[in-house]
Length: 86
Image (cartoon, rainbow, N blue to C red; front, top):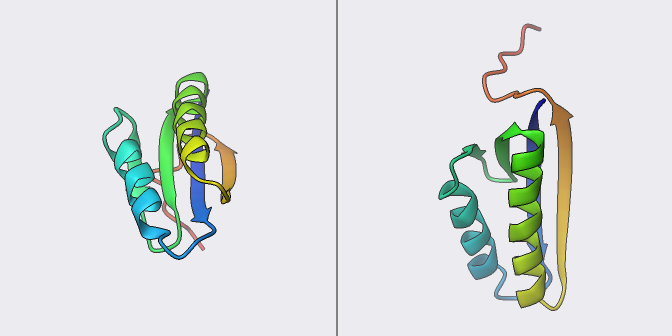
């Protein structure tokens, strides 16, 4: 089963940009299709593989950040090529 994950990371301190950039770069450097916008990053692929990858990278980020919030939306299916028809 393929999934799409919409991820937002919120380090709760003044120097929030560096950890966000580091996290996004890890997603970009993966073998998974990723897309970015000004509010979040999306990653697409097989459920087990993507979840394992995201979990590992979130764990690393949380170990390095005292106060950090992640917001994830997980959707079944690869929505990377979704075209709204409304």
